[in-house]
Image (cartoon, rainbow over all chains, first blue to last red; front, side):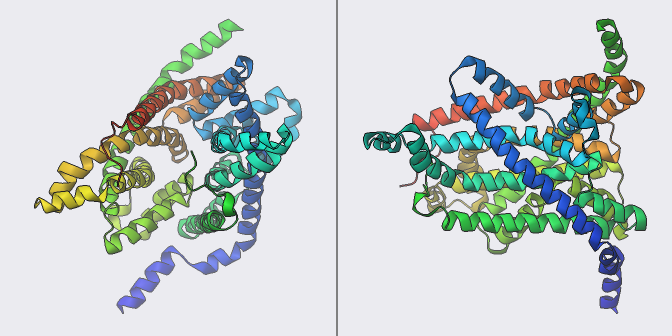
Length: 238
Length: 234
């Protein structure tokens, strides 16, 4: 009796049969979410490396603009940055008018994430001990050899956990792209909600999808810390 | 050109400032709610009680694993639909609640981390003197943990301010929303108006961030000079 009541109540909030009708939409949304996150991840690591290089360069013409860029991004909301790119980029580059919203979203997420990536990369490079570089010099390695065989492998191992953490944040940040009409996971949930007026099925499914991605990244990050980094893993990065 | 912009600015700025006051109010209420909730959970989590640590850990993963936008939608759309009368709140209550819960996940982590950073010997010493758990927390542990908690809270506060822009989507007239309204009146000046909005956010967040940086560098100096309140464990 009480169990029946509870079961009815739960199905009243979340009925999987309704979600089953929308599996295609959720799959399409998930594909867009992963595409946005993946593309922004690669682009923001590339841009972040440039920013980190500029900040470490010691030339005022490079450090100053990089610093201003980092502070501007850190001090304004992502939603506003997305709106500014979405409405502003087509005004500056008319070619962007014909771009799909997803591309504009990727540009905005890249601009937003690059400073955080730059900080991770900078601390990764600085976490490699000076003695390692001096040792490499002593055996006659060139700058490129030192970077490739000594500095970058260790810096990469030291930064992987932070990089994965930032990736988890990036995946969550893609949810805001639904507000510039990108059809991501949240938009799929919105569609279900507006067609069936079932917020439970719509948004709890969305939350479950994001949680699954997050848990996969979490497990991956713990695995990486234990195995992939191997002996290069420095337990107390400077 | 300049005349046009100054005219737009003059007619739009009062609304933007009203929106900013709302952003200020929401962020202060959110930081208050989030700090209280996060502090309570953090104090419990910092002491390794058997079930509480797992339970709070699950709560943290739930909040860390989902975007704030989705948390807001769940609290605003799903919970009132459960049929429980006291969950049928308006958009303002839902916004403040979701901001507080979102903030609490960060505060919990900071507080429990700071409590765990205080060496075990401090607990044992206090217990040896016959102090009870609450007394130990209040007189021995928390004063030492505070030095670690306060600088990190500033960063959480900036995150919260930035998150308040998202509650504009459930119809709260804060700064971002007022900016959108202004754009409805001057559709040709989208970039200019969003630029002004961004500048207002910047003026609010940047000083807080600088203050946090200063606090952090100061506490780092204290640690390197050996003046930290929490002594390193043997």
